[in-house]
Length: 303
Ligand code: MG
Image 1 (cartoon, rainbow, N blue to C red):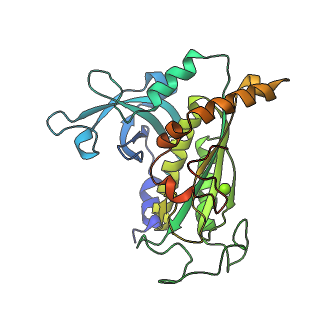
Image 2: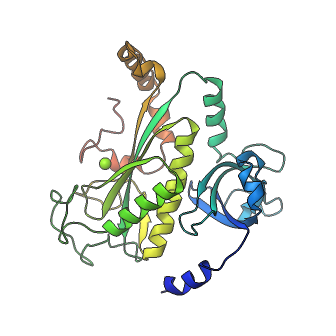
């Protein structure tokens, strides 16, 4: 393993510039990043003054090899919990050189929708579940190799070496998100052993998406440090084991006010009319998780 203590010797070297880790979303909705040097004076001027940058979209499945440039535009800045100090993480979104959002850039249309309804004050509370694996990507963390632990029951919010697997990762991720400035509001061990959850929010409008993607990036980096594989797969182990989802809690200003219950009912009815359309947008593999069992609804039934 690479020795973090050796790295610390170099990380402690004094420098005047800021290292800015630009995070972008690839064709699989996974965060990747690359780093550049910025002057501290420029960073102080705010996210709108940070330089745009580029990456090779032919290496991420987002552009052809003969026209591979993807432009990334800074949208939000967070403190970098890995380098510490005044170094930063920069959430970006992706464009063609002509300025058109890439098909995988769902942030751009979402930001337009939020901007068109400034009075709604939409709050999101996002509950992200994830599953930890050994680096073989087959054995969930803490499980016997080639076998199964005892059945579900004791693991949810459990404490003890016989039922809690990976708490150091949950804890390190929590602290790193707080340092970054994210509105992480809690964490808990989940129903399947080796499975955890954290919550982002309440966060308003597009900030909720930005914070979720950065929190997932931080989770990947923390797991990299611990030599553990993390997946957001909806049903990583088939059978009598809970899947992992991201539950989304949502409200607008009108819903939170007196008389809001009628507004909530009306919104829910509208969601029901477009159930299939929404399920299709929620990512791949949800039919393996949303079976109506293991604390889920059936994927074909709106409730
Ligand atoms: Mg949960």
